[in-house]
Image (cartoon, rainbow, N blue to C red; front, side, top):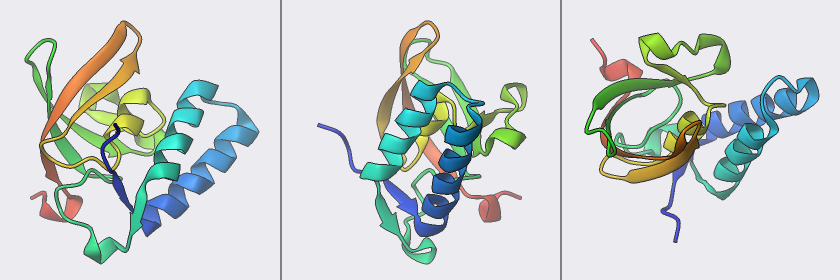
Length: 132
């Protein structure tokens, strides 16, 4: 059974626009676009001010633990133009980025990676306004 995910109404609108553009331009692998589409379709849409601060949303920083390697990482969920894996900026159009969206701290998620299925645990979520 899938866990519930939450996204802000603003993220929902922005991500739907991004998906429309990607479907038209075909710049991203279809399976990535389809996965993001299925994630936002099943998500509960919440007014921005009402969303709890422990859910991953666009531009939030997530502290995650790779359950295969026990390696901790800090990753920021960003739009494709801002993606830079070396800086920890993960595109929402990547399988990892789409999998993170809407889950809360304490959740364990899995996603398809180039070398097979990956599992990570979200340890903490920090929003841009909380970063100093």
